[in-house]
Image 1: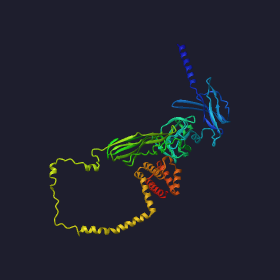
Image 2: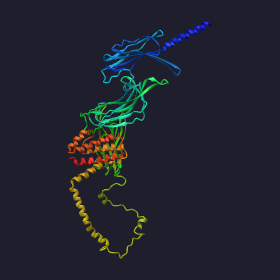
Image 3: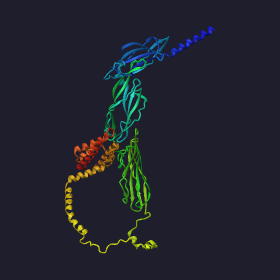
Image 4: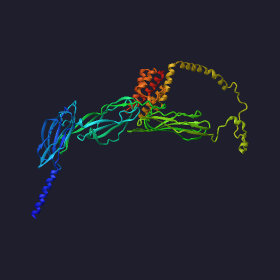
Length: 593
């Protein structure tokens, strides 16, 4: 019995020894894997058991400037013992390139353990080298937090969508527990831009320069360039509080951290915008870029004279729906057509603007007959296939009938004999008046009455007033400058009517104001949306003898429309911009030749 007991004790001791050996770890840790040739790196060989005969690697390609330094950590947390033994070296690289730190070895309880190889990337000399100790919180924070601006397409065509996503990368060595502050926001002077609000910041796992990082998407902006050539985007700059862990622990065994506030910038970005190709461009091309469908839909095809119908021109798809121009609808002269109404049902996502734009015409036929409506064409540039495409609507034939009470030719009405209708009792006694309207026989004669003299003398009394009005009209017609100014003010208020209606809504007001300014230029300068660029607008206005100060005010007004959509604006500023727009359009209309 004692013999069997000794056997079980021996087996228990052996199994415990094997379990102890299986738990031994020995690994190599470096303070960083990428450094300049004028910097230093710290290399730690860490084990969780006490060992002997430590053999370091040869450190080929490095110069040992410090070490070996030995440190032992022995702690108890929640009644659990934690042991760690570290051999530390400080190395300085001797050449650029990928240098390998070989395996180290140590013997624990008669068993030899080795570490794995570690490869470091050595770059050219950096401007501000670090000592490689990995203890400076400022340096650690700078090396472990990065703000990146990712651009979906850096070489788009004019009016082609490109999206810029701002990501904040944070390594596992540091943490951010407080809210950051935005110092500088990027401006998109030569773009139509739309920020997509991020309702909630979600944490993702990803790679930054080949290393594992966590990141959050701070903001996403959809851009449509309005100008060709290299366009610069100012960087997004943040003030970020970063918690850097240190070497010390509190009484509960938790690592103490140091709060470091760092200013991090995404860096200036450049987007090179390509002009749209001239080869294969249709004559009716107005600047639409994307992938669209087009159709013309009547509310009905059969109707009566003087009844109204609506014709809807529909453009659907993905692209610059916010700035494209609808094609013209040509109808027979015998159809009465009213001013069209434009409606937009679009939404902006990171993939771009999509939705539908409609332009509704109200048509009223005056005579019966058949009225064919020729197919309407719509052309656009597809950046995916890099070709121009032209789509046509179907031919529509309207059939107008005379209706229940048709219009009759007067010549035919005279030649037709009316049919005799039966006389009803009401018609038989229609000449008998139940309510007599009797007048006295001795009535006052009209001649020389008060009414007679009032009508007789009124022209004489009104003569001076007529003379004054005539003189005023002649003076107004002689005031050429005043006449031009009144016409210019009338023209300005006509184009800015939509913006005036939406003064209570900042976003809609500035979009309507910008669209009104563009429509005014297209009407006065006879240009298309594809030709809308600041340089061309300035050249055309200066060529039409518009004063340089007025042109500068117009450019400032356009820039104010772009900035106001993304910055806080008061009602006073909105009213000021509206009055400035009226004054600027009036001056241009007055000065233009």
